[in-house]
Length: 112
Image (cartoon, rainbow, N blue to C red):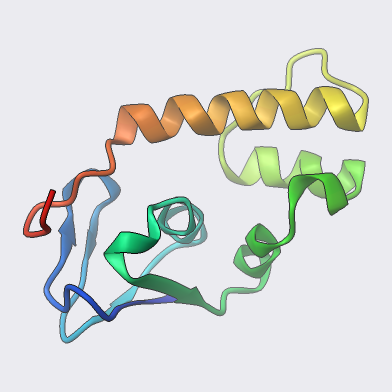
């Protein structure tokens, strides 16, 4: 299971993501790890481990079509009619942007 660390806010609670740090550490799911990796560096959060979650560090354009398909499934993204790598990346990026906006990235207990 991936581990997340918050060096800046050791008791940070990200309500919409369902993540609470205790002593600067939190165990998270692969989906939560991916969301945490998209947060601004100002939160001081790093994510380690988790097998497939580690692939989240690999840029989308460096992944194979099969890896993009697996990433989409892991994150509940419907690729629709996207077949090519470029089409899949466009759908994933659009869904990720929409999800980030829906989840909100303002944690409780952190400076705004």
